[in-house]
Image 1: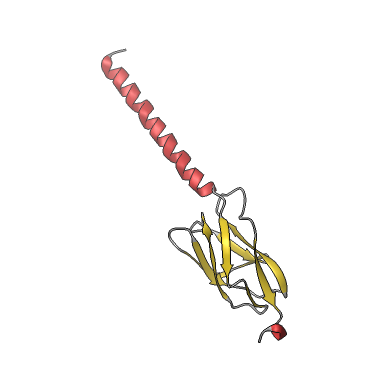
Image 2: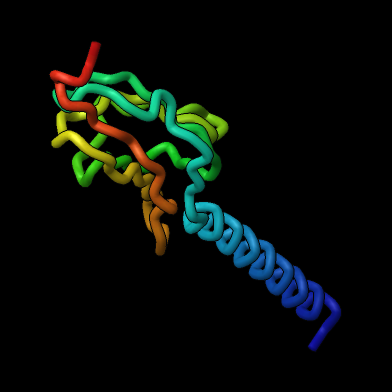
Length: 123
């Protein structure tokens, strides 16, 4: 094998390694589990309509959020992936799970809590 062939083969090997490394990094980012640090406010009327902010990390632009198993409405996720804002759907009075799921992630976030208050309890 001539010098040009060895050089071309080495160059292709390096390009392949770079490509595989970039692919691995890209896939790794999408696989990270989101983390919720708090939900503010953490309670609202059972009729829904409460504007909430979920703080945390590893939120992706296509993350989904459920509150008591029902999708959060009007979701907005900041570009740094640390805040999600939205409007609560209606739910039965009581404490429910708030869960964030990233696209292609194996696991959703550990659940945070939100309390739906009975409409008669709100003053």
